[in-house]
Image (cartoon, rainbow over all chains, first blue to last red; front, side, top):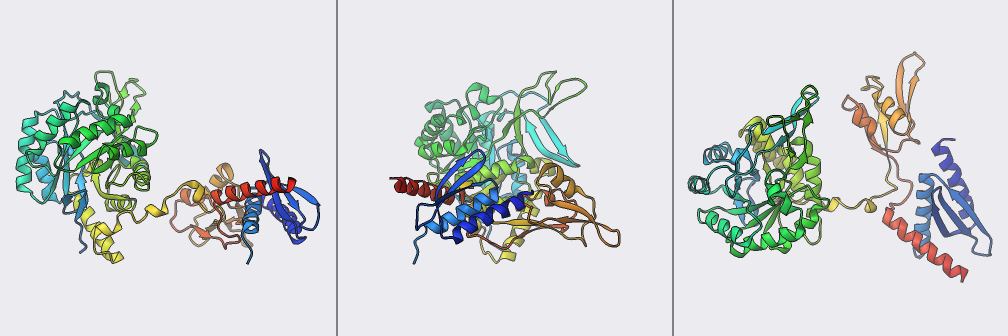
Length: 72
Length: 428
């Protein structure tokens, strides 16, 4: 799989969780990329995605910044 | 015609082009000829205890047909008596009162030595002083030049000693042979420098002869490191000027030096914070009259931009120079090959395939004609293909539509640290 295809795959998984209402609540960076923990706001359900591509890591980071910004 | 006059820490000159302290400014004859040609100022070849030189002092490297891409010298400071130099400085200043004459000075790191030479030189009417803490060869073995200039405490102390008696502005010339030039620049400021200049030459060995195994140059079969300058050092010098210009504790004017060969180079240095520039190698390569093109080019550039005075461009690019951590990670450019211009030499494909990110495909159209195409989704915007392309306009680097808001590495790290804190709170 090309880097780009792998990124699309990672982005789809992230978007799927975000659309379910999950929020990023933890990030562990390591030698294989980043493990991103998602938490559903209505429960204790968590899911962790391993994000390996550079574009994927940029993508969830941008979402995290957006998530941290105060909502009007 | 724009106003080309500059005022560097009180030193005024009719244009920003000065000859640097070096062989071109060795004598009154040379400096007067330089002023007649149009140079706005000259930093006299370094004065100090007269030295002895060796023969075979210069060497140069060419690159791809360009002669003197880099230049190296093992010549020392002036070998003429101080009184002779001072007499010629006096005569030159009298003949050219509106041109800047700056005396470059180098003595042992002793207070009385600095006091003596500063007083004697100022008595003949120089417009300013430049303390040579930069020469990397010969004098450095005796504790002067870059040997002093690599130790911030010595830079500060000697600047202070010069300033104790100086009545004219003191410029401190810095060596690039140091990890962080802002450390010595700040030391110069702390010592009271009115301005700083950079860069002096870079430690270098130009080459080794494959037949004789002698160094290039060599003196009767032995060589020693020299000082490297010329067009090849310009990017190094420009960065050092920019780093000093944007440093919050370095607030004195900068005289830019290092590979400046034409008006374009001069404009780049001034945009990056230099108030004026000093030139040596280009004059040694082409003669004093290159300043005519420099003046014309600068004038035309300023006129074309509608800028009335050259001083208006000083430092205008400094705010655009920052740390890597402040660059936008979500900004995307991609390569686009123009098939009408491309000559299908395949250099871009080879460069990308072998050494970058394998995103340029060699394809054949329905008529059997070969063409190259970038897979934009895989292109990381590295610029390599456009750098190696031999045809202007065949490859453009174009901005891709923005998909995400701007985000720097520093923004990202802040956001991540917040996420970690939140997780800790949830866990509690």
